[in-house]
Image (cartoon, rainbow, N blue to C red; front, side, top):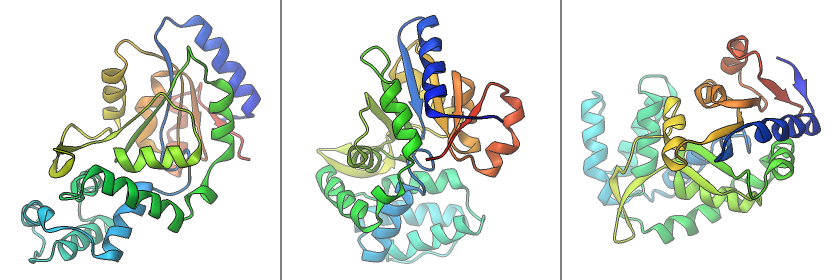
Length: 257
């Protein structure tokens, strides 16, 4: 996989966009791509540290633990920790963990989650973890006719607040959505998680018939979205993506800054 500068990538995106039918968009992953680390995990770990998971999430957590054959209790924070530890050890699927991290805010209002995430952004020093090369490429390539969509498996409010703090100008955030009733989060998902091929499905559902001029990602579960793009770009790629780079010869790695 060749390395390309921001200027080279932006030039390629411009040429690709000019040749594609409308609507034409740019898509980017969030965690590991816009910033290092995972903001969904940041938010979840902060919930556990504060013991702030509310009783409204307990029944759903107990059901998940029982179905996974794991111990349970009457403390939602303890059940969530057991599940998270199992995922960290590879004993519980990552996909299920991401879903749990989305609806585990059950009982919180959406405004409460936004305020909480703004605190987490400061505490976890998110702004020191930005990938400047991605920010520069997006800001130079985007235009009124080439909008940028962030596609992530982290909770939608968590990603929206993080993108806003990063100062990125995007047309929208497509991310994990819990069910919400009367502005209160419910202990279930509202739609399938945008994960792996689900990222492609979610993007095309938001922008039907979209032509993807460029896509940015860092990990293997971004590969399907990268395949969709005329200009696929790896951002500080994880080993699992680098090992599969030969499957997408047009992919380049954006030079780090």
